[in-house]
Image (cartoon, rainbow, N blue to C red; front, side):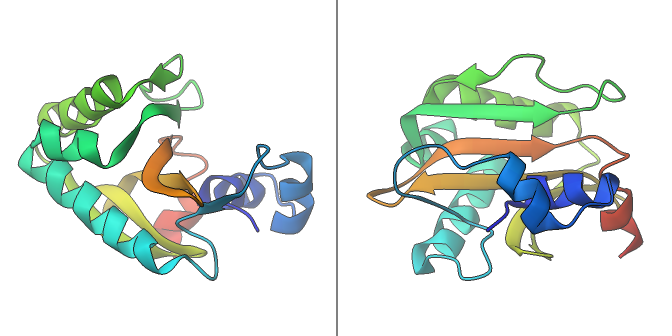
Length: 161
């Protein structure tokens, strides 16, 4: 199964998601993604709690939803601002997310049904400026990865649909 990030990349490069997913093998160990076609029942609850904590700016609640070794990766495609390097650690990731929302006051952060499942979107007006997905380990229902797609070229199909 592909993640939303892989799906958006496949749309940009006109490849089939399965073909693209084969070129990005999943990390070792049992894992599932919130946006799989058959998501784990707790995935929606985690995303809702994450969104609520981020929007209210409650850093302690956000940290409890993140694995201590969580990694945030973002892709701006060299077109828009994004974290240049991965961000590691629950507190740093939580501060980054809350900081993004504070700096973009006109941006809403909502849960949306994407092509492969629920994701959180950063939206200005009627334009999605970012798509966020959470990845968890099967044995721990906290987010182990936070993936954000900011690249407007990869979000074109998202905004047209």
